[in-house]
Amino acid sequence: MADNDQLVKQIGNLIDTKLTEKLEPINKRLDEQGQVITQVKTGVEVLAAGQREIRETMATKADVLNVGTKIDKMKKRIEGLEDHTAMPHPDKN
Image (tube, rainbow, N blue to C red; front, side, top):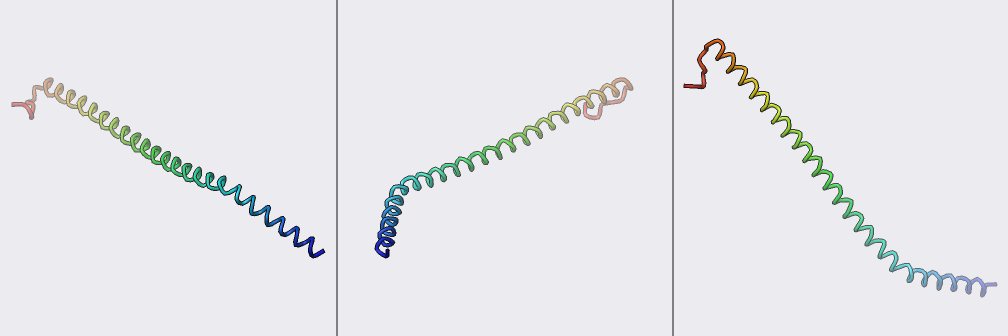
């Protein structure tokens, strides 16, 4: 009985050793793929952050243009009132 148990253990160890040898390249490849996935994930996160920044900047530029348009309209209204009331223009000679 003891011989059978030892024989089974030896066969099990042999199978484990061979299986480990065969799985080693697969495990190595999986590790490499995991690293590549991490790099891609990092790149996507950086890209998303850049796009958010661009959107925020563009919204700010649009707001500035909108304010500039409002200022131009106000200037025209004030100049029109000055012309209509015959007031001198303070910024003209």
